[in-house]
Image (cartoon, rainbow, N blue to C red; front, side):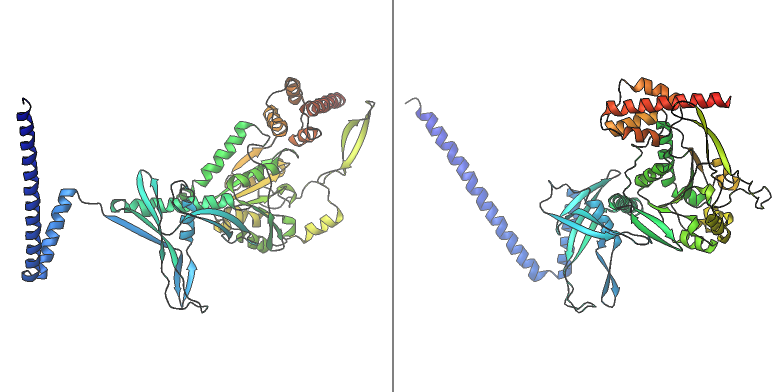
Length: 514
């Protein structure tokens, strides 16, 4: 009986809550009814202009209370551009944006992906341009992705515009066309147009260069003929001092970034290199490494095939931008030694033979005679007489009025004898950087040992280091000895024996000369 008051109190509380709930429902229903009635009366009694003003005021108040949304701008990049007369042209900007976005798409975050394999022809005016395959991941129409540039968010969306019933120039119906939309806050419009979009196009161009097959071209008469170039040389595999290697890389990188600088100072955007040193020191390998690093095609100019300055001009003008012009053995192409007054100097009569002491197997000295490098055979003399190309014709393109016919070009000269070249060729602006390709030193040997056997140390290394410091052998000679066996012990032992014999012969030659 003591619990009856508590039960009564509980029942009384529940009844009050139920009454409050009923009153709330009744009030809500009444408000809703009044709102419907007021809306109906407003439609009947208020004019359209007043109702529109009321809606605008309500929207304005809501925006002020909720915080106004930032204004957005959108750039539309269509896949095809109408050219009139039912013709359309591919939009390179669309291709560049799609190539760039392929590196930004996260396949795990996209509901749908389009995998595309395209075959594109090399851009520019390259002769015999080659087609290469590339595989891209693309967004499907209706999807979007976000990219961040300099802390600003840019949204890319893929959309599809429906076709029309008109016929194109070939008599067919135009189907749906794809476009890309780039959206961003209005306050970042200048950044989008002046920095972000150029960044997208530049990045896409770099990606294309990495994927495309390199070509090497040779000249025949007044035209170029190209072939695929698959030389495996890179700066990592070059047998040369690390400091020299890094200085070349830094110079190339600085050159690539200086387009505006060259334009500001009024110079053609090009860079000249002279590679000089004994045969077999890696000059051709360095040229190939530069081409692979820059992703530039090679143009190997054989001046013996060019007989007129006008033919040389046509060849060089037809070279595209982003290319490397190579002129090997420039000292042998024509007489590059001139007098200080500008008149051609008659070269000294070369000796018929040169003399070099060598030794038989028993160690007794003997004489070996060989033709001097400056002597020419009769057919070579006849060809030289008919050749009308001059040094001034070459210099006019390298550093004269014709030097601005292209941009972002590398010009590489090679020679075994730098002292035979005219000072006019050697000056900055023509041969800007002179690189001596010397004999195989210790750092070059360690690179070769790592390339061939994937080793960085060996018990024979100290003895080989001493022998390399005592003799002059080229990287080509060392590479030949390392190629003779795939076993490091056998190959290094053979190299030590070769260097020891070479050192003994050097000492005998020095004793004879003294």
